[in-house]
Length: 581
Image 1 (tube, rainbow, N blue to C red):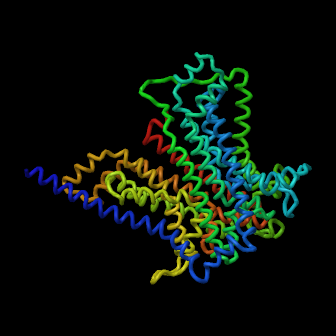
Image 2: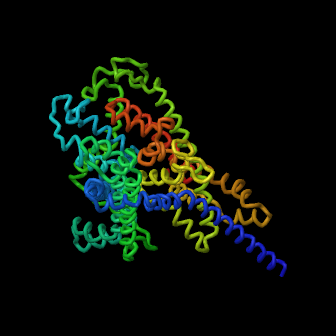
């Protein structure tokens, strides 16, 4: 009886602690994610701003404010999603299901484009294909005498190409994982029955990977419609607007209410397509591809097409990875984008102010604004990584250890809500939320604190996902034993969970660091001259015609991102040896 009573008391204490922890975590998530969105909506419903809805939706301005940008946005989303599924699916099929040469090399390279910021890829495109339509420097191809048409230098076509080359690696990752689960017994049975390769692909492989195709398409669509950097760099100079660039423009010129309305509509569009994709997948239940029977990987023999298909794959991957990095690097040493391979100079890196070069702008090591931006960016990445992993670990711990109840379900749903919100719309929401004083609290616009809070909230889904993986590595019996001996929640977390999963936590923090260091869409509206960020400076320099400085800054961001990503991968492979196998 005593043991039963003790266990009953222990359970009551356990659940009481869980309820308190759930309440604290839920309140934190509401403050970080829900309230900014509510504040944005309420701002547009105030008497002096409610007219912005009419201006955007049903006025003489609506065509330029909403409907033309909306049409461009939907076109970009549809084309990029389709192209990404085709290219990512093709590469995934080569790597997983064929005997193409150097499969592992193709697989590794196919994951790299998503590591390159989209604004860096757009800068590289401009460095190569820019023509003289809007004045300023011309690109390398026109510099050697080629006549670059306007449609290839600016506007919709280059935007579609750059975004496709950026997002197809996301589709590749999802589709490759699905193809790896296709039961080889099905393929062998079809081959025995006399089915040809095309019949097997369209009759077996394609149907069972439909969920992955839908998921990849919906994620690529959402990413493309919310992307700000590429249409801003390649489209705005010729007045091609999307919802994200129109939102940025409205807030830049002080028409914040109209900007917030556009931001709300952008969130609804992205969320609707992600929700629709999930509903399509959730509504289909006949995709079982893994059974209790063992199976061998079955690869299609490409025969004479092995090397031609390898060449096609490498051409795509080189265009998405090696060429942009090479172009950006060469341009940072060239006096003019029109001449990448001669008359090099170290001025854009090491030079002091020289009136004969770049209107006297000093190189990045002598430029106090860029140096300050570097430290602000690194500090922002570090602070966001620490804050994000701390909150993500708490949220993941709460959901994993105290699963029952509506509070746990609410925590799980809210923590992943930022995935549905485009970065530029999330930044706009934080301007509405913390850009003005709230009671005794001062306005935070233009401060480092606002950058950290907004970035932490925006990247919480990744932090929570990493936290879940960490919690799963630590057996619950260890904490249960410590709890029985009287250890508090804080002590159990600090002395058991964190030390045992430290390597995974550090790896997750580094990945968050990388995401915010190379982000432009979230911080472009939060940028101020007193709180500069590298990605926004690169965009500003590019907009003002200083392409070499923009490209040099992009190279710095690339090396920081790639270096940190390699460290994170190394840590993950050590804590999870199967990843290195």
